[in-house]
Image 1 (spheres, rainbow, N blue to C red):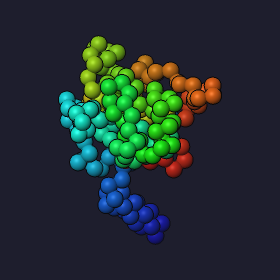
Image 2: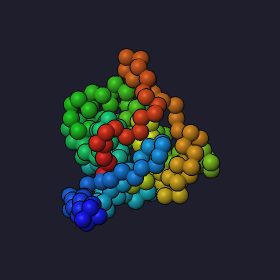
Image 3: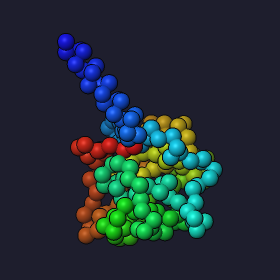
Image 4: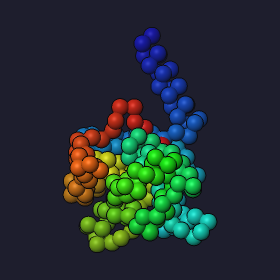
Length: 186
């Protein structure tokens, strides 16, 4: 009876995730989590960064980087709250997220302007990373061009990771933080 109950709970969870198009977290202990999405329509071609109507490069496919880092979930940004940083236009979820991003854009924007850090370090190549191959590691967003680069990162994340960023006010981010309680990323 207990096995049957667990199976039903698991089936309901999987169906709920697929039906709502929510994302899930792929855990890579003890370091962090990978960002995955069931929404294939949100994927982009690695060679082609999405552009806004004004011809600007759209960072994170229009998702809010502040919500991603602070809440570990995907939330579509709003064009009214957009900001430019490192050649990308980031859409923020609201005025508070815009203010936080404006105060410390390097904390919320993907590392290396979204380029694959593994290829940059190992092959001296600057290749755009893709959101579907992204990870949040120690409160920073890293994007990779393919699954192979992502796996190389997880083998030795300290080789590729950038130092933690001090928070506004001089406090330091907790370097052991990976996923907050209840965090989920689509």
